[in-house]
Image (cartoon, rainbow, N blue to C red; front, top):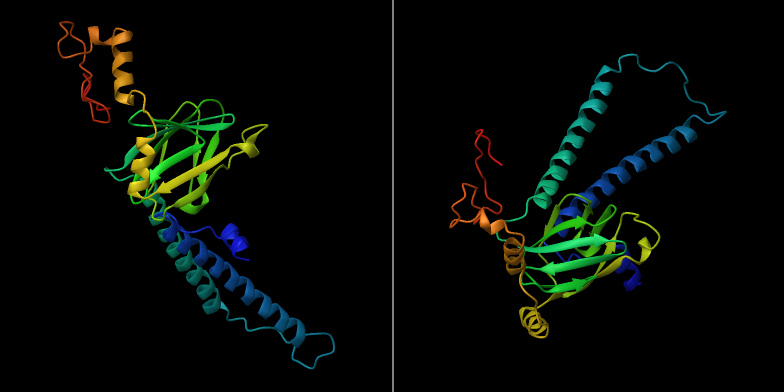
Length: 260
């Protein structure tokens, strides 16, 4: 029974999970309450006005304007409240904190390729310490995929030709399923993996046991030199081209007055 419940209702293992669950359960309660009310009224009318019952079947009260106002305004306020709560959860999930640690993810048929800032790479696995805010910068190599970790209540499309981001802060150590929830081809069902949330000590031991290649910054610097970009786009260049040092993720003014 416990395994069935854990499958149907995964543990709340991230800071985002409680807010998502509160919204989800409130919608279930609202829809269930309305359905129950409709069922009760329907059964009551079926019994009271059944064939042969001795009740008045005269025309109803023509002055129904107050009722019409009530069943229009009340649902309106309920839906506005639901929209406000859902928008609050959505904006929280779509705005990564500035101190989030970036992890780069490439989806392809049919695997997840993960690379950390220090150069460490993983396939269908992600090792992160508990309590640390992580921002995934994701793109697809072929078709649309979807990064989904039920225990984190995190689900986001991964698109070819553009970058999307999703963030979370794990709150419980453990091993959590990673799925692709967007049908992406023949072996879509096998495109999964695991997110390992570790204590600081366990994560340190994992880092010590993995020999990292060059960091992403070092790889980028070599590519910058290899393709001759540094000949023009560096502070020491005598060619009047824009310098590229220190502009990543910063606003840059252009000659026409716009900012990118």
